[in-house]
Amino acid sequence: MNAEDRMQMEVSAREDLTSHICQFTLVKQGGGDLPAFTPGAHITIETPSGAMRRYSLVNDGSAPTEYVISVKREPESRGGSASMHDDAQVGTVLSVEAPENDFELVDAKSYLLIGGGIGITPILSMARKLKAEGKPFQLIYCTRSAEETAYLEECQSFDNVIIHHDGGDIDEVYDFWDHFEEPGKEHVYCCGPAPLMEEIEAISGHWPEQQIHFEDFNAVSVVRDDDKPFNVTLAKSGRTIEIPADRSILEALRDAGEETVSSCESGTCGTCKCKLVEGDVDHRDLVLMDEEKSDHIMICVSRAKAGDLVVDL
Image 1: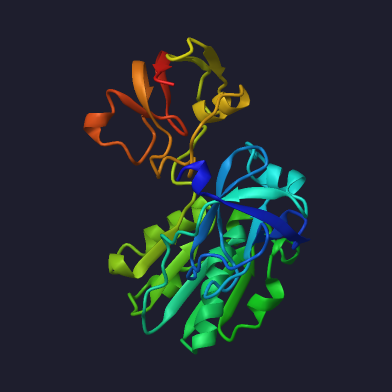
Image 2: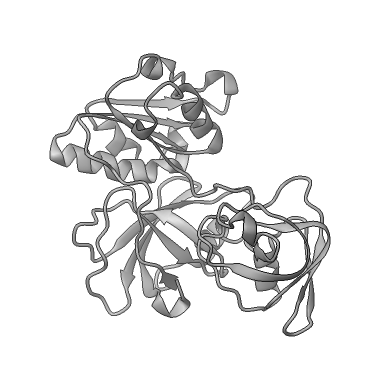
């Protein structure tokens, strides 16, 4: 989506739900109705730092005049969550893309909803919808502690809920096997940190694939421990920019004042695709076809495999 197609929205309220999770309420500048959405939907926000980040919508989307999201400050934030916590104050104007839903709640006889940490946000919207419609569901919500559990009281109010705190101890994580030992008829929706979703994927392998649904905004590791710095030259200006080991090409270009176009910044949407002029690329995206990889690059996640790169920017 081009920048001119985004909505200009203002932070009308913010509330600390825990010491690391803040809820933001966004309204359209000047007021008015907003595009509707269904449970599981997300919006993409250009954070005050310029980073594009996806956040699940928590509120009712049938006829919204506001969008409500919750953001966890990540300890190694590269410009998204820290920017929202530090700089998105009441009155701040943010550029927001219309809601999308890749985690749609399908019609089923029953549901098992699994949320881990901040992954509760799309799960909570589903639980609210199912409760309102009187449909049977079970909610399992895993966090480190009660103090770090957003929406704790509301989740405790649901009829069939398990809330588990592991204290950060790997030996105390919740054991899901009893829920998956025998394939059931329910549809499973899971959102949370990678270890949780990997576990659910592993223990549900004998279930019908269409009954297991995941929401993952971090499908690609943008920065890896063994990444090395390299240079990117912009063919149109001749400018050469160093890409640090802990920044993506897109982030480094943005840091250097270059205009960039992006959306997901996780290698899944294709918005930042660039023509590759020269260089050996370590392709990390989930978008490019094999025949495109010799002369294109997704600058939000991919890097130089060896040497430097020249891109058509």
